[in-house]
Amino acid sequence: MPTERKSIHGQWSSRFVFILAATGSAVGLGNIWKFPYIAGENGGGAFVLVYLLCIAVIGIPIMMAEVLIGRRGRQSPINTMRTLAYEENASRHWRLLGWAGVVGGFLILSYYSVIAGWALAYVFRAGSGLFTGLTADGVQSIFSNLVNEPERLLAWHTIFMVMTMVVVARGVQSGLETAVRLLMPALFVLLLLLVGYAWNSGSFHQGLDFLFQPDFSKITANGVLIAMGHAFFTLSLGMGAIMVYGSYLPDNASIAKTAIAVSVMDTLVALLAGMAIFPIVFANGLEPAVGPGLIFQTLPIAFGHMDGGAFFGMLFFILLVFAAWTSAISLIEPAVAWMVENLGMTRIFAAVLAGLITWLAGLLTVFSFNIWSEVKPLSLIPVFAESTIFDLLDYLTANIMLPLGGLLIAVFAAWKMKRESSVDELAMGDGFFYWLWRFLVRYITPVAVAIVFLNAIGII
Ligand code: TRP
Image (cartoon, rainbow, N blue to C red; front, side, top):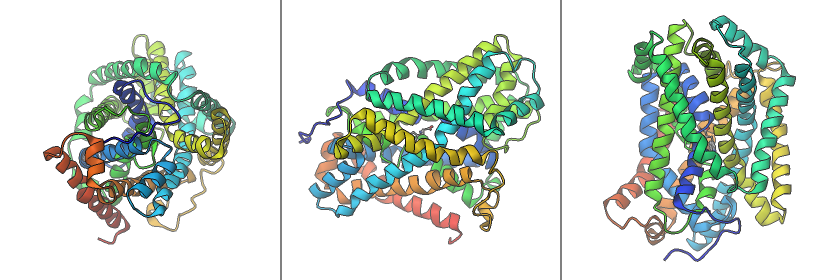
């Protein structure tokens, strides 16, 4: 029997709306900004293969676990974990998993918002025709001019945070639905257009080879950890975002089909972005491993040379901002839902407060690209020798907190919840597919995450 609980924050009007919202959360800067640049830094093909494997055998099963826990608890992740731990006779400490998610969400959003600010800035740069006819050098200097100035980054970061808080304050449902319904397909079409441009760039094959020809000599143990961390990041897993969205999911919706649909769409967007970017990288003699500026230094070249490039460029960055927007709200929703439930705040007040804290933390990232660009706090550790504060924040959240959070979510769903509870919530019968899911989250996920960690630290 499903529980009789209802969420006090409301419910999605259908499974389809949930798919839209979860896809909106999953598809974001992770797919279009982060995936290409980390694939570039970690040698391409082998990295992409590990990432795809992680999506299939770790990501999809954990997404199902997160949705099922969320829907059963029907509260913010902190209270959901507390309630379910009680019902399933597990330790009270499981609620700390909800807390870890809240902290992780703040930290991720703090830098996510700064990067989304770059995309906002590029809407205007593209629209004004600034990229027309530019070469790789010109495009690079436009990028450095932006990130070298803390005031500019701060202004764009502030605007993006305000946009995020406005949607969160209004409640996740209104506004979000239309945004995702129209804009996600549009983003998809624009990416196809860019792949079409890349096709004619003269280096399409080189780009594809880089992405899809695995060369295992190019990937390090740390690279494998980054690929796994990114599987969590790109699917929004491991910190309660999908759990809180699951808490608004109607009882009769199939969790497995939903998780697969969301993951497939997310992966397609990332691969399309890679296929658009790498041919441009090679056709213009650029370096795949330039880091976080990669898309901002490649795509403008394409827009600068195609017919109607100012228009398409502006449209592309607008859509990228929307993709980031629908992701950002899911990063802060667990914290806001908890503040409303436990601190008796109004949604508006909770959103403003959460936004302020995140905005402040965002200053660390803003300064990482200019006045603190030479600050390398962990330079004594070889893998972090070159890491700025932003790099460390990204590493800590995506490669450590999310996999650990995901691991614990898997352990809770597969080891701590009674079999009846998960059979009941997943509603796909007690046959092979249920067995497969449970096997993956019980054994494969914990073992895989542990091996990748130990391997990255150099223990095995
Ligand atoms: N998945 C989003 C992206 O790819 C980012 C994101 C949104 C996220 N919510 C999350 C990452 C929760 C980790 C956890 O851009």
